[in-house]
Length: 152
Image (tube, rainbow, N blue to C red; front, side, top):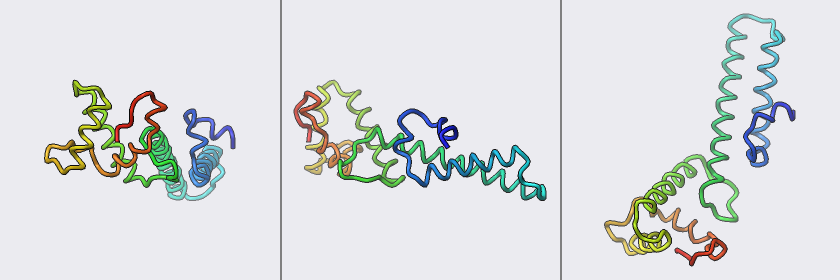
């Protein structure tokens, strides 16, 4: 099992669910059986099994990508795991926020604080990234540990 899992990027393995590891191992085992000629059946069955192996590997790589993405977006400390759609929506808002901070001439924490205040007051020019979901997560960040005053 270890040799099959060695192709995962560093740090991803410990975040994989048992189901993802099982899917990956199953796909790797099936691929090895196909290569070894283990399946002695009709050509259509071999083609179908090969397609299933490719699909399992594709889904596994997508799941690994989501696991990696979840490591880069702000989350609540008690949150087990975001759904794929929540992960994508939060990542989009977070990327938009980072782009906005880079374009701003203000100090980053002052700019974010101003944008959050605009969003909370219902200002029509509040940035699109200032979703309640992202703002709530930003409030959980240990700002003092980062050496800046709290933003939210």
